[in-house]
Length: 162
Image 1 (tube, rainbow, N blue to C red):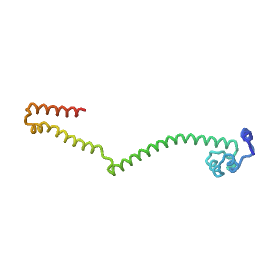
Image 2: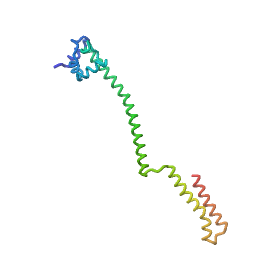
Image 3: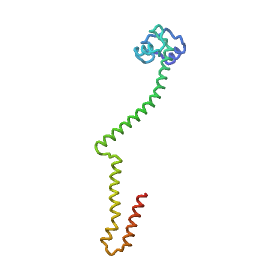
Image 4: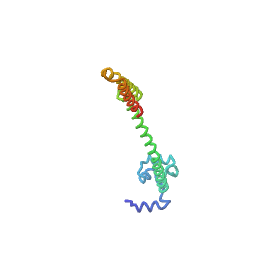
């Protein structure tokens, strides 16, 4: 059985033994021979005569390749977070459209229009109050009715300014 010390000793010498086949290098790297061939074909792993691999340079090249992939994953993480943000925004948009279709959501313009109509009715009723009181309470003087009218108008003005 090969120990870590044996592996370190073998890797310390740049000319360790004969170049390895794809199967032998695959055992060293924990890959399949097909993956080793693909990495060699892509120029990631150095090859000798197109089919053999020098052990130390191949391991160093594979480690560098793994490091570069890890750096790329950091960029991919940022991209993934942006994609997640976009997916959430699209989901919220779809939920809003569904709520609108069900009638659970009403446009702010429609709500404003309805409330404006209600408040116009309240305003008209309040402005009519002094004359209705004057009709019911015939003993009130025109001055009393004018004072009630003034109080109602002041109250409405104060509410409008808030």
